[in-house]
Image (cartoon, one colour):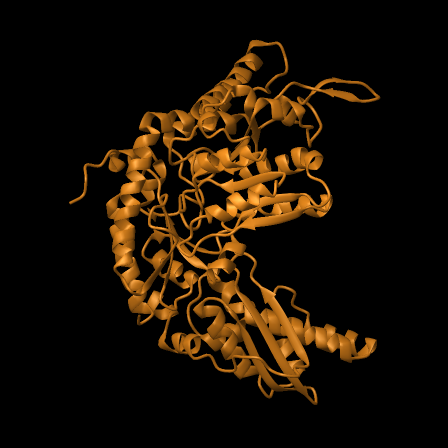
Length: 404
Length: 146
């Protein structure tokens, strides 16, 4: 007997014009759909308030600036940060690159260690490898257990070696594993190690508070949280931002420029060179309003209900291999018999069910799991049990096509 | 549509691939991957008097890329390299003979791409500059095909 749904997904669905297409969309870990209010907010900005920000004296520019900075305040409040600790970038990837280049460029040197985990997305691996190559540092990875959880003792041991930074994902985009972020931050801080959390798969789906977690850096992408493409967020503790050098120069990030040189603007603007994606930021602010109206606890509970429902049914099928622990975020990676994940996805696509297949930008993890690819479903607040049922029925069809 | 794409013959080649494995002392070893999906194919050819004396492939990927590569090795066996270099998209699609969506076309063509790259490289290393120029002008007129 299913419990009372905490969120009326059928109603939530009506907020998203996309679903008029009638597709079963199970790929919110890749990107989410956008509620009408987000699209309206961006359209309204362009139609009524469009002007460049932080420039000009006329009142329209002030209006645009207020829309932009107002969104920063909303996003800051949403994760328990102060607005001056929120830097707008293109996406989580750019945020990690910024930290690796700016903070890492100064604080990571020869023979230093950068600590990551085996379950990271390429975005939380490659920027660090690039830094390590430049600084002659080394990258090491906390292993995962057989069931796909972080090997905690290994993490504690690695932290005792005093790496320069520990960067890990809050929720794995492949395994769904929910890492004990608060505990890991506390352990890292005991050793004086600063922490970056990749919250791309957590901020859109559960309550997240940077003050509670006490992380030093946090990154996430707007398009994975019902906002537009092209806007992402770097959160960093104010004192860290103050010490960091900008990685891009140009307009808006300066205080004063002479023929000889320049001095930097205050944080966070010194990291936002050039005209920013103003309408995108406004859209992300609106997405935060939308998520708040649903309530993050409700979103989390709803997606937990869905993932448990799907997991239990899939677990009963001997042909299905599920990767990752039972206790997980709204993500299930799996394989079907000897079918390649792309073939699974192709068959499901024909039945109007959108699931991701491939390496999920986590090739080292695939190697660790001993597979070349997996298929993956992931949920958003607009998904229903009917979506899961349609997916499960499509899996049966896929089995039939492949004589499994 | 789906049942057309995954016909018995495709599944058979996927599960029982012909010419799959390592070919010792191969003259041509060519490897490439579809970066977006991670499929990877290695083609190996033993060249005998300008002909494909023996050929094997190995790799990982979907039913389409594996079956297509296997079928291609069967088709190429015994043919002159010059002819192999002329294989194009139509040849490959003719071999697998199933409806292929745009998204999956690159799966079907991966083995062909790898084989042709390998043959080109081999020819590059084994012909004089003049022969090569003539060979190239004959073989690689159509840039849209691999």
